[in-house]
Length: 132
Image 1 (cartoon, rainbow, N blue to C red):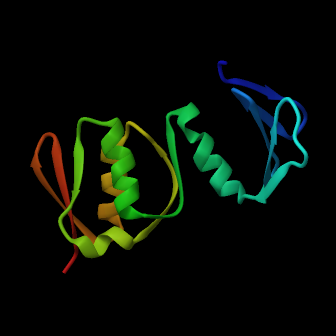
Image 2 (image 1 turned 90 degrees about the vertical axis):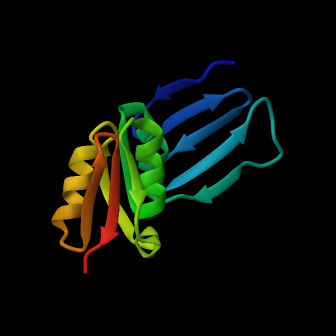
C-alpha cells in the first residue's frame, strides 16, 4: 500500500505497508498491523528523526555525520560532484541543515572554515583538500 502520513497532536504516525511507526520527540515505536504480541520500542534522537524525514523538504540534515557521507548525499542529488582530495577529511563531523541543491553554498561554508581548500577542476567537479 502507499505511504500515508497523519499528524495528530505532537506525535507523527507514519504507515508503510503493514507497519506503523510513531515518531515522538525522543523515541520511535513500531507497531505492526494487524496485531502483534508486543510493540518494538527504541529510543531515537530527535536529530536522527529530522535526518530521516529531511528528504521530504529537499533539505539535507546532518548531526555529527562524517564528511564523506555528507558528500555522498550531495553528489546523489546534484550534477556538480564533490571529491575528497584528502582521505583524512572523510571522518570530519558535519552538522547542520543544508538545501540539497545548494552545493556551492555548502562548498563556501567548508572553504570559510579555514581548514579546507577548494579546487574547482571544471564546472562540474570540486575537489576538497585539507588546508596546509
